[in-house]
Structure formats: structure tokens, C-alpha cells
Length: 367
Image (cartoon, rainbow, N blue to C red; front, side, top):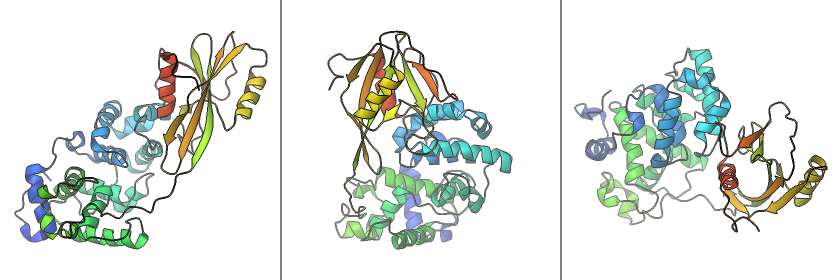
């Protein structure tokens, strides 16, 4: 299907989709990089990146990722370290691991072509119902609804739904509405249109209702309650966990990194040796560096926030005064040269701390 936004089959459109498509024809975005040659692979990569991440943030990552992995074969045959390197900075790294796992399955089970069936797409790691629906609508022009964050927000406001969208009953209600409004023609244009409306008009803060094509039937607008909907998730105070990063640096300036386990936070990425208490750090130093001269500095605490908790990181810079080389075990450790970065996946706070080690700002590091 092309994107000429033809409405000649008007009988196949409901008022909601018709008004939205008329708006999209004039105001919709048509220059996003994944809209050029929207193959199933390109749409899939973009949809995974757009989970939890805004379009403007995704674009440079998408372009760089696609330049390195322009097709599923190159993605499937790469090393996971390299995939994580090209993902680094986007966060939610399970998405990258799922992409990699899915690519291998697509090669093995589907001869390198993303399946065009909902159940088969949803069986792939990291692809839920909404992502599968977007792939089928945008790449295969099949009539399937989507229910990403933008669509949830639009529908919650449009119908003034006074409960949190994450409740199972409300989620099902939103799916029913999404199915009801998805037209039987122009489905690719409609899918892009409703995502665009949420991203550019029906935004989280300060929605531009004056520009909205759905304004006349929007209950939140009629009630002057657009800032109330959607009802937010009941707030919980995020707990804070503390950890210590051992930044062991040798006389050549290299820093010891360890590969994290595949599961858990920053799974599969390279990080500093990590311990939970000062006592554990001191015990590690005594055990690993018992015959070595070294200098210890405790840097300022770095706070990194995840979905469910805050992580308070105390960087411990240990600078070796003499030659020392720890044995490498099963390729889970490496000496990272801060002056010649290699292509490996690094969590955002690890990357920032490595940059400080390469270009230290005197007076800003110590506690």
C-alpha cells in the first residue's frame, strides 16, 4: 500500500479513522527513516527501538544500527557484544538481546523472512501483540490493531477512561476499542497516523487539542480534563539500592571490565567488578592485590534510575602503582583501553565513568 492516503473506500472507514486519516494526509510524518522502504525487517527494528523510547532519540540509533545490520542475516551472524555496542545508550537492553535471539530464529525457522502471521510473530522473543500488529499493518498491510503508549493515551482521553490503563480489564477494553477503530483499508496509513497523533498532538504534557482532528468527540476535551487523562499508574516510592564499582586501572591506563550475566540488569554488557559493601571491596583488594602497591579513591556517588528502583553507585578508583595482570577466565574479563575504545556493549553509567577515567576532571571526583 502506498501512502497517498486515498479515502475512496470511505465506507470502510469509521468516523474516528476517517477524521484521523484526513489529518494525517496534511500533518502526518512521512520522512522517518523506517518509512523509507518499510520492509518487515526495518519496521521490526524500529518498533523494538521505539518501545519505551521517543522517536527523536531513536532516529540516530536506528540509522547507525541499520547501517551495520541492514538485514536479518547480518544481525543473526554478528556477535552479541557488537549488537549490544550498537544498542548502547538506548537502554532496556533486553530488547537488543531479544532482537538478536529473534534474528537467529527467523533465519532458522522462516528462511530469513519475518512471518506474516500474528501468532508466529508473537512467538519470537520481545514481540508482543502491539508490536506484531504494527509489523503486520505497516509492512504487510494486514488489518491488525496496535496499542502502544500513544494509542492508549489517545483512547483514554477520547473516552475519558477513569482507571489506570494497566489494569487487565481496562487493557482489554482498550484493545476492543483499538480493534473497533482500525479500518479495513488504509491500515498502514492509519497505524502511522494514530502513532503520529499521540507523538505530536495528543502528547503526555500540554496536548495541542486545538490541532486535534478528534477534538469534537473527545470526552476529555469536552470535560476540560485533558490533563487528568490518562489516569496515571498508582505511584510507589522507588527503593534505592547501593552498589560499588571497582574501577581497577593499571599503569598503562587500561581498566578491568567484567562481562555481566545474560540475565538481570545490563545483561550481557561489560561493566566494572561490582560489590555491595565497602567491606567486600576491601576484601577483594586484599585478596586480589595482596602484593601490589595501589592507590584508592572513592568518587562521588552516581545515581542511575531503573523502572523499579534507583541504583546508587559508588565508583571506587583503584590505581595500580606497579605492573599487575589478572588471569582471564573464560573470556569474561578484559582490559579496556580508554584511549582506544573497542566495540563492546557498555551500560550508560559505565561508559560515562570510563570517559572520566580517560579525561579526569580534578576536584570533581572525590567524595
